[in-house]
Length: 421
Image (cartoon, rainbow, N blue to C red; front, side, top):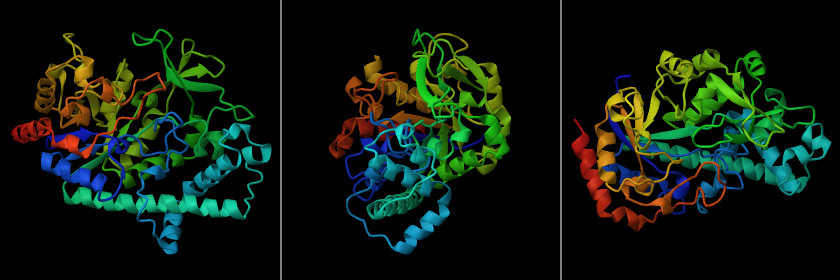
């Protein structure tokens, strides 16, 4: 991949002062990025978050969180809504139905709904529920309109939007409820096996994520239509897309659902080349692999076979000559970070001269360098976005507009300018 070196900022929409979208939110932030010389804005998944605030365990793999929308700008024509619903027919109705029924049953997971609703044999809605169904569709159409405006603004400033696609989907989601045959579930809809990662030096018992595993033979029989539509939707929203937990294309850690830890799972073969060929046909130069952790050679070969850039994180660098995160092992076809949303900030991690790490990232041969906004502002652990394996105090960091008047931002702007060839 021969691409002009670019510098980007990692900052999720929820970290912007409200309203998140519109002239006072995302477009204002875009203008500040343009002034800094930044050409890529990376954010986390736009999907509705789970009760803990995580956008990686959403009720939908397609819908966007309506809380991002400003209170104003509600007006949208019926024809616009109808056109949007026609374009997005393969998910919007299932999502709206799912949300209406969620509200009918006080937020209970779909597995606890009455059988007729759980199995979709009777989905009759009353008048108020029909109005709510339409309202949900309208909210998604409004988001789509606002996002198109944002993408146009970003394009006019030569800034690319960089999104994030979680590999797995939440069990309590419209996607699993609407098509349980695509997942490893029992006859009552409960997962038989769930995802996670095995024990390692970060966790003695591994990580049990709890999301259901895919029945790949079903997806293959369907020509991977759900996955194809999912990646198409992502590229309707973004210019670049990071696929989280890329290694699951090769194999996923399968944990019996009745096990409380990830210790006794096994590696189950993933879709590999069959699915990646289809996804790469949709966007041959827009996909980036999250390939962090202990990655076997088979995963690396799969990524290289398709020319997909991987990631390097400077916080993971050390003196090990074979460490792919160490600067001497960086290469052009990768994205380099100081840290990610799952890391502590660089100051909190213990690197006081954060400027040196930012400069190292910018000097890397990697075609794209991404710096979390917290590192630009030299913030400590109080600004950490997420601590994996925990559910409290995550996804809450938010900056104030005045924070971007910091002298650190001016230094960053000058450093970006000096990094240009």
